[in-house]
Amino acid sequence: MRGNIHTILYMIDTSVFQGKKAAYFTLGCKLNFSETSTFAKMLGQMGVVAVQKGERADLCLINTCSVTDVADHKCRQAIHRMVREHPGAFVVVTGCYAQLEAEAVSRIEGVDLVLGSNEKAELVQFLSDAFVNRSPVAAYYREKTKDIRSFAPSCSRGNRTRYFLKVQDGCDYFCTYCTIPYARGFSRNPTIASLVAQAREAADEGGKEIVLTGVNIGDFGKTTGEQFVDLVKALDEVEAIKRYRISSLEPDLLSDELIDYCAHCRAFMPHFHIPLQSGSDTVLKLMHRHYDSRLFSDKIHRIKELMPDAFIGVDVMVGCRGETPECFEETYEFLKSLDVTQLHVFPYSERPGTMALKIPFIVSDHDKKQRSKLLLDLSDEKTQAFYTRHIGQEAEVLFEKASRGRAMHGFTRNYIRVELSPHEARPELDNQIVKVKLGELTADREALRCEIL
Image (cartoon, rainbow, N blue to C red; front, side, top):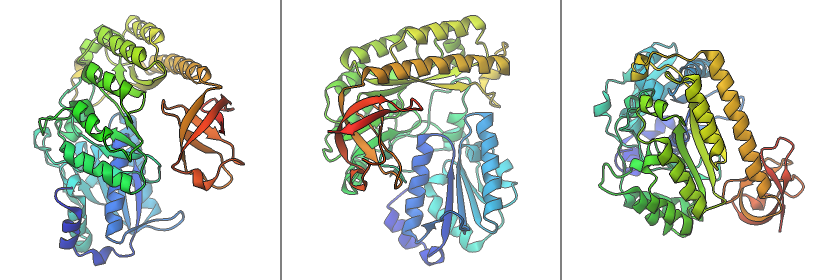
């Protein structure tokens, strides 16, 4: 939002929203979920309440993703489903798919308002005008990438224990396979001071853990002339926040200074998420990535040298144009050799207008599935080996709220998922950091059992 939310609400007749019920649906990344949660909070200040299961909404908001053609398909499905399940509701569509395919979205029956990336920052104003007038479809989507300049602040937790603080938006990298710069614009950010203020506000609300989110957060500072490592140092001084996590950092922006600081600081956890995309230097060049496999390997080794128990997640794309069998084999062997914890595997998806479409070698869907399975199996091996090494150790866990009679879950400092049995789970443990002893893997092998010390 531009300006102060209370000033904006003062300028809007919020009486028309009092008692209205809203349904929210989000697709895509943590950044989208954070933004939707903030939208819900803003509308809540206007008297809008979240719809309960089985109720019919007066207002529907769909925050979309467009990272793959599958994501596009899911967006269309979600819009049609919301229109069908909430007949007569005022339907707002925003997010990346709304920016890239706004005209197509505006033609979907039942859609009332389409907001592009610039207009999303002023959702309340646009929604108020359109909702009151109940006009035909209003679509705001005509910005080119260079014209997307607004920044919509977001620090919210939704239904989760962890807060998500949006520190940056947009991307200047223009990788050959990606449409995100066209959907979200160039890199931009707020000031360190404003982000520290939001962290303090989250702490005042009882928050103990914050995840820093954005599109390319290591590029923080393009707008303000500041640096990401300085943001990290400033946030670390907000002592009421006990834990910070960095959602994703490009390897070329993961500085040695930042790694060294995280290894010795108070509250930034030994947990990293680093996009690799390919372990083949040939493919990395075709992708127009800003590093090679040697740089990536050096970053992993430095993290592990200083933080041996650090959790490291890695993004990998399989089946992109130009990924020959030999290139995939390079990727597999490279990942096998690295001391990383988990692989997030994504099959390549053709995106209209991207430079990747000019690369001649095409990987079949069958080969994409086979390659994905090989990497997912490798990921399972690495994750379970990492978990197993910690069995019998003591750890501090931040527990999250559980339904009555269900097991309670939480995460250690280094992001091991922990399960507390239903007979030990207690409501007062929600959002509390508790010392536990880590036990065996659960039946689904996705967590470690624990007992409270």
